[in-house]
Image (tube, rainbow, N blue to C red):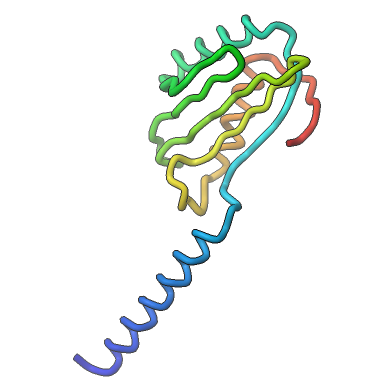
Amino acid sequence: MGIEYIIAIGICVISTYFLIRHMKSSSQLIEEKDSFIIENKEIFIKELEEISRVKKWRIMSKGADYINFKTRFTWKSWGEHISITILKDNIVEISSKPIIKSTVLDYGKNMDNIRMIKSILGVSHKVCKV
């Protein structure tokens, strides 16, 4: 083995070390969030369940004021976790983030998930950006 190989291996090890260190210290993930107001909580939850059935998303957990989905694998991503929480005054917080935490590029898939859910539900009144 020549000196070039030893240097190349050393550079790879050092680069991997700093990449892992950065990933552990970085709290910024590729995650999209949004908020909006709904009129009826029960109807909203039923519509979300219908979306999950049509899109073949798996409901991971569900309660009176929240529902969490896991989307399927696509060519854009390994899947996403979608979390929808209903706060007081019928304000809904929705977030979509990659299943794989080390994802660097999501091709806009998380934003597409939120836009798709809002368009299917007919949500046009945006309260605030979370």
